[in-house]
Length: 252
Length: 172
Image (cartoon, rainbow over all chains, first blue to last red; front, side, top):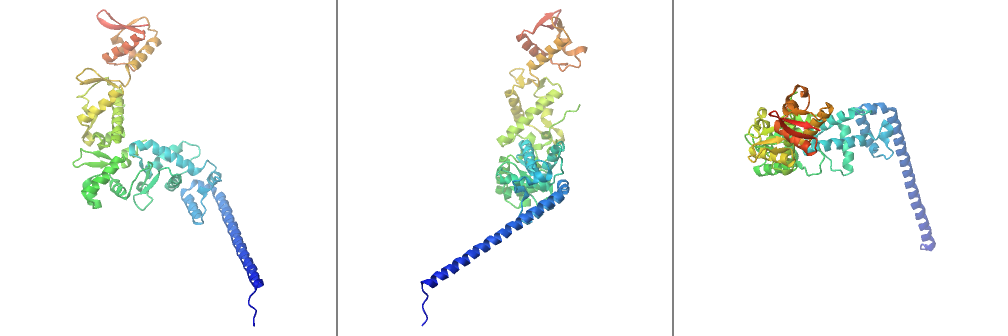
């Protein structure tokens, strides 16, 4: 007759289990350590790469964009680095932080006129003008500006980015600098108004297939937000958007 | 030099009194500035409301501010002490792109500069004479000149007098 497992056996089993558990933990620790080392290696390589191609990154917006994309694909975000990655790399104050501050300045200066809604094209045009006078002048791209604004969004500053189309064509992206609700319906109206800087209820009905009530409601909301103005001297009432009005955009 | 119109002047809705009160505020402020800048540029000292209509319309875009709109603009100007009605009929007003005080000071500085204190000048000399051709107050409207001199009188810097049938002023 076999002996039934005694206390000794149970004890032994428990010790074995502990050892396995310990091994698992040890293994986990090991893997984790390896991962950390790998990440460090990646980071170092990235930084080496960045230093080597520093000038290219500094001068060439397209190259800079590719570099950013490469970083995100391996889960490294130089923008989030607290060591001032970009300031070390580019040798000037935090590159994107600087752009973000200038974006805020331009938006504040123009929001009186356009209701806090500005096209990316106009924003970039004014930014370049302002930066041209500064000592360290790098060529900034639409992509740079969008990244800087996204940084602002993270801080909850009330900035939002509105795409009128699926492209990153500068005239098709709007930056909203006043916190407010611009929903999909509002965006639809902006899309059809963009080309001529104005629209009408008839045009809205025709292009968007909405009824009178919906058209009027949406346009009233845009008027209330200070984004649209009313012209009562056109044959049918028209609604105009300073944000798209060329003489204003091209001014100063 | 050609007057440089602000972007709003080519913006059709600028000529419609805006329903959104915040936007209307911005609109009226832009009109206020336009009136002052326009009068300054063209050295207009007195504005006749009826005749000022061209200022409140843009033929190129076929738009015109309504009389209600013009009234609101003039109200804003008055609130800012930048216009003063000539009389109760509110048909004409002085436009203070420079206040009478500022005019007075300008004239007085000129007088000091030329060492002309304790002499008498006629109004004509002060505004139309060859010597003042390049001064800002050249061509100053007579009523405006009087207002300016009144401010100087108040600070004992001048005295308006009649002599030989013309009006003149002595500076101290």
